[in-house]
Amino acid sequence: MPFRSEPKLVFHAKPHRHASHSASNILWGTSAVLLLAWLANGTRYGWDTLRIPLISATSLLGFEWGWQVCVANRLMPFGTISNASCFLLAALLTFLMPPTVPWWILVSGALLTVLFLELFGGLGQNIFHPVLASYAVLHHFFGSTLANGLWTPNVIAIWAGGIFLLLKRWIAWEIPVLCLASAWIGTVLLNASFTWEILASGSIVLGALFFATDPATSPMTKNGKVVFALLAGFLMALFRKWGHDLESVVYVLLMMNGFVPLLERYRASAPEGHRS
Image (tube, rainbow, N blue to C red):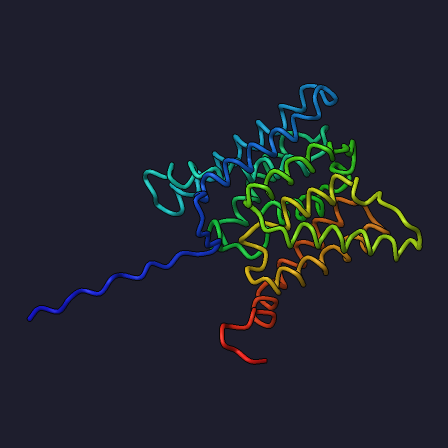
């Protein structure tokens, strides 16, 4: 009697989502939200409002296409691009750049972003957020250039975009809510005064809503998310006391990205039927 074939198990890298929304739809939607938040700056920065996202997106698409063809040996690499991951990374990179940034830094940032993404195995397998890692390298070598002409993001637009993602359940509420709460409490304690000003910081809010919630570089377990968010928020408040908001967000989240495997291992939720 012939053996009955067993169903095949299919393994995928995280993020794992079991919902009516596909990962591609979430990536496209988040990219659109960020683009609208960026365009909310209006004509304040003139041509640079369009120049920065156009160069970032074009460069990222070009480098990703080149990687897939030349390194991954995929003759038809458009499937890896059509899921909007490149556009989302470009939108996030745009928010980290000052309005006067030279074009060659944007291109360099796009190249570094692709390298940090692909060298760790591609989308969903990277340990560190590729855009944050890219900015950290650029800041190390070209810090004075990036510091010139620092811009003020439209925090109202960022809040609106983040709330939209929460309502759509495209991001888990634990990380942004607890991160911002921890950052606020940390600011109050460190300054010994009651203030809400950290919740009006575009960089802090952007980091909590759009960078810290990246499913590939944040914990998957509920306990892990709580610890991740509380530590990240307090450290942001601590770091910004002696530095800029943006650099505080970048380096704190990169540091927390490195602790994610540890948080997943030691703060995992107890399985069903487990008695602690």
